Image 1 (tube, rainbow, N blue to C red):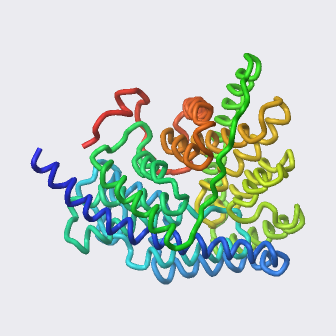
Image 2: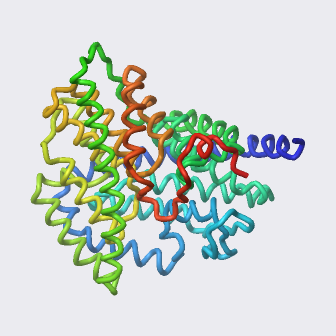
Length: 423
């Protein structure tokens, strides 16, 4: 008991430092990427043609500066759940006994690469970069303060702070950090430090004058039995689409790796082809994180019934060939636009259908449950809380333990498994 209390106290103090660092990092990076995406949207015709060359530059930076830095959240999962050598090489995936150090150039390279790929129009996210930088910051802090025995807890605190600062969803950030490594298990020993880091980062990201997207919907709608059934059917569809995204992404990566031996040539050729398609199909509408798609849905209900399908395809293609900024926001935009389409087909309230689609597809694709529920409630308000929770539970159940994260540990899904204290 004394040992556990000591760990909680030490990690909680260090979590404040982690939260402060990542609050400023997330806030400043969030503002920078908003400016970059706005600039790209205004000048897409001059920027998108160079997407292939931008990909070559990114691969070159990783290879010649820090090869291990190319790995995103899968590296964080390996550090969290596995054994990693002192040079960052993953040696075994099991419960951590020896945790290595993140590459020194990791944070800078990840942020720079993400900015470049979004500037030139890759259909990828930003949260994966920030979350895995959070893991690296947690690792750095454990080294700086000679607290390597608490590295796993501090890594989780770093991820929670990063996601919280970027989306300004402290509870969602906390539970994402607890869930993303192992589906069905929550490492409750890290809960208090993760919460402290998350709320600290949330506060300091606002100091940077950064404001993440939030839109509280107001429901004055009383559903009848048929509409409830349509909501449940929508949740099933969202779960299937999220599952299809995870399976499709892994299949595409496997085929690409098998067929394309020269990564430089591959990203140059395919990046240029993808850029041409992005330009000619709705003038760059499907470039970037997909945040503008979500914003447009709430601003003026603007969407095309096929938006979700095209964003789905472009995101898988871009991530497959090497643009690894993150999947979360693109997945949420896929779910949101799919929700808009289903609202038209099923006669459901537009904003409600968009919200449950946004969260449920994310839940299914990432194989997480609590994080999307809390993120949805924090982003879209409490009026939709019941519908968000129900849709995420159904989508999570339909997922079948598929995930966009290769190294996510899969466990038996039971109440015991979810609530147990994982040592």
